[in-house]
Length: 150
Image (tube, rainbow, N blue to C red; front, side, top):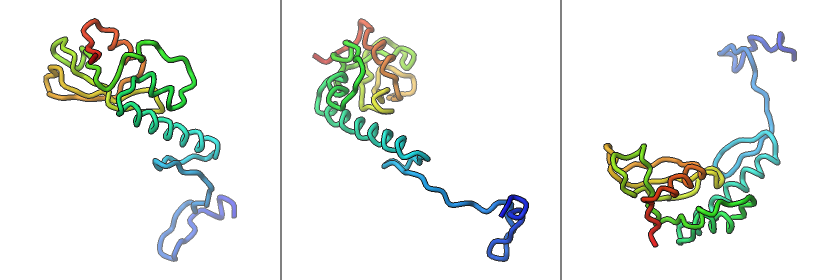
């Protein structure tokens, strides 16, 4: 059936539609994300599992860098990440009203590219959290007021 023949075809004899959907094959990852290509779905699923492994060991107290290595991160890791743990309190000045450390890394997101950071350090609206890219996490950790919880 060509497009002109497909136009205004009756479905169930009660509704006219302009296009009849066609069946396609796709792959779905654990979190429900759909992929047209199998290799992309498999790579994405690997990222999900890598992030899960990193979060498990990070929760048990290892540094961000160690969690990334255990999870199989294959690239160079900034030395500052060796010092950041779940007990590290960061100053994130644009989130808060005073320069008191209080925001703590909670868990990895986005395939080890970012972390969710949460805490209270004088924000006008109370406790706050948001995703932070690892490069920004390193920048915040370099603040002289950072409390590494040692």
